[in-house]
Length: 272
Image (cartoon, rainbow, N blue to C red):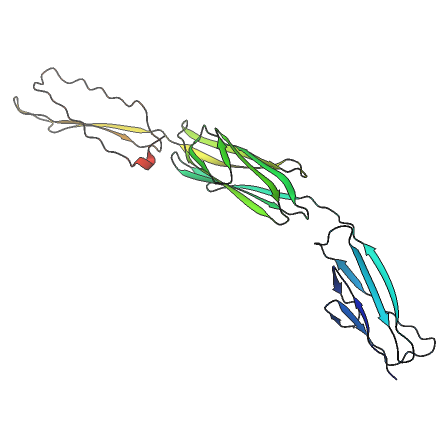
């Protein structure tokens, strides 16, 4: 005496086996050699609806059973899916350096990702830069720069979708000492409220100048020549503006002449 296999097929679900029955391609198989008089048997099946399943889907589930002595019979149930929509947008801002000196390069990266289960619409990012301390600013092709404001828009950010905005610039010179430069970027979508993230860097500006004067001889015969050298050196980390020197020569000197010897820094260190 033997029984034939009974099959149950699932759609749009991920099966979880809770008893020692095989599951193959969504089909659960049960077989029992002998079911005695008044004997009962049951199979418990637990499953989780796949997160990609939309709403209003009928999960039809039909089980078929028969034995050698009884005809084939059916039993069917159904469930209607209801989706719990989750709107979630992750947003971060980072900076390439947390400490800079004037004329350093610096880079901001803004990252956003749809961490919910529904596509986000009309995603907007705004970032107002501190142009008092930055110049030569450029942004990635997916964003726009208008004066000090970086703008980004995306019509649809799909589930799991992500994007990034890159902002590059040069650090301006500032007042002497340490300055904390911070700025905050904002993002929101049609389904999510405004949120923000901020970063900062410390700008260390040092203004320092060294002046020296030397003479070719400390003892000179009348009629001989003397040579003076005046040296001014920028020993800080910022450009100095309107540097001047004045040297009043002794009245006993005749046939005076001068020559300027200048050293130059590379163009990459020149302010714009």
